[in-house]
Length: 61
Image (cartoon, rainbow, N blue to C red; front, side):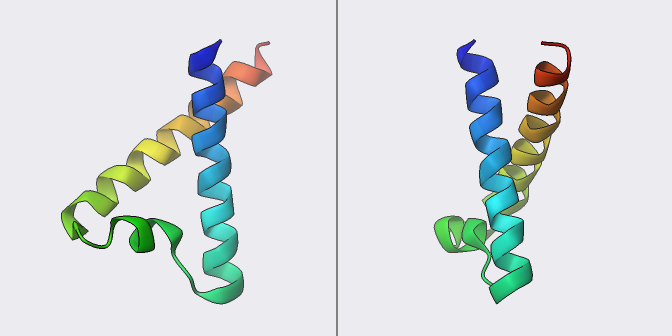
């Protein structure tokens, strides 16, 4: 149950980030992890995977 909630939270975070990028050109992930530029793609991949996991977890509910 906690795994699904974490995946849902990360998926929502990714959605909020894309909304901010589209509306204002502000990338929340780059802002939060800008001190380690090599980490940004890894964080984005984890958030994308979590969004897919949340989607499928709540579809088969």
